[in-house]
Length: 492
Image (cartoon, rainbow, N blue to C red):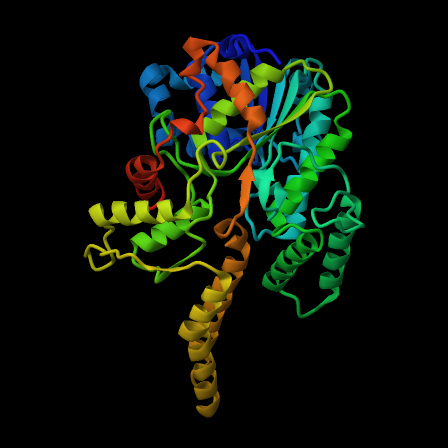
């Protein structure tokens, strides 16, 4: 593996990026446009009905955001002119052949010009419908590969996966591929086409059920995904279908140079284009905001477990570096873990302490206009302690309410139904997030460290394409960058 100039590699290149309006993809796009304005073209695949709608969506969901402020300052009134030359939003959908692009002339143009394909499109919802997740995360990856294979000048397919394809396996997780049919628990019978057929059969059964509603069908599809994931050793539908996507790519890639990037929990930007930019609520942020708003009576999770997080700009820089390092390496398949659990481990108790420190100094304001006073809440450090706590505080009172409701001829039906729904929702969330709150996994990043060393050899570009988590002081990052960013950009 050799790496000359990353900026030199990006010069005059044409890149297709799927999932282009997603959080990570936007940071990736902004970085390329900011540091290498001589990039030839970025085709951005956007789920939209036509080219006009794709452009409008890109402008609204990307360019209009604070993320693009530096580019706005640099180009001023010429920004749209620059973007129209360098960026082509394309209406499409990776769940379809030829990525759902309807214009034959545009398809031909793309096949003739694209150098690199970057697949970031995915559903990251842990509790997604199985049919939706399999179509996007598994067969969508196959459709992207097929499109890339038709590109005359293709130098690399970069596929963004997740480190959590390893499921709940404890210990050191290596940067190695998963092979077709390989179940985490050793179970036999894992076949992607069979999974597709099971979905089709279940949907057909539901279509014949006259009592089925859209809501009940969605729940049935969610339950089916978790059931199938658990059968083969994965904790949820998201990581299961991402693992199947990796298997599909490895099996079908042929001579295509392939890099699979597996980030861990992606958090707000560390430095660029400015510290603390984030969009949407990540796993740990839902807990932080609930705590800051005074809505959490306890924290669930092992205080000593390592929570693997990595700032989004570091992931984007690693993506760019892998493109430059592996373009034109025929038949290569390499995997990179982009995380921190080996290089700079962060313990769950440190996040809890940072939350207390930040919200003590910068309290959130409640609906009455008063500052929320946070305290060191109870920590439930095992599922057994959670089950005892939840039973005493919620389940036993719910059973009492059920008895009173029956005595009063169901006069409290509304209250009971609402409380039961909320209780079931919490229990489902706990099941989904349990593997990450009690994680015993550490993600080896030996390949990534070799790449970092190559980047460091170019002193000018080393500071530009940084992705070394060892530089992060976690308490400073969470208290002065991440949590302020979440409050500012997510909880507006």
